[in-house]
Length: 195
Image 1 (cartoon, rainbow, N blue to C red):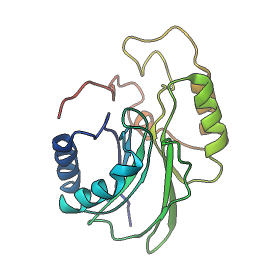
Image 2: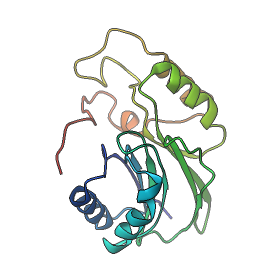
Image 3: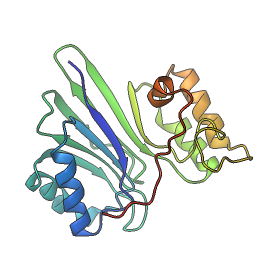
Image 4: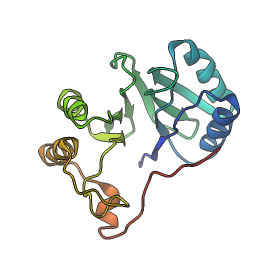
């Protein structure tokens, strides 16, 4: 059995119209799990957003709050997901990491959704503290692995967060799926988009 997972930085979901458009669009795709970063949810938003996700055609969801103008991560389960999903509600409450496990007929997968800090030093601490045994790691790491091919314009300075991410990939034998499949393509995941 395969698991379809999407990761998406939504750059805030406080606007109800945008939130409903995003939820509706995602619920109608063929994904099993959706990992969101930069949701800007607060503790007061969680119940309403969980209900709105279901109203728009989704299933269960779990949220780790940041503030109303920064951070926040979530994992949304769709109705397409046939595996048994167990959400980890013990994730740190800083809006940077959230986890779940999904049990299928043949395996158990641990999924960690990360929204990394903008600061290289803070990213280093996050990477040091957050990953020690997970199978699938998704999210917005706020850095690139290769500053010449993964950015436009490219950067001339080195980033300690990038060095730590490269070490993490090596240490845990992780793979950048995009770069494996498209080793020379220059496409960029960040663009300003209005919903």
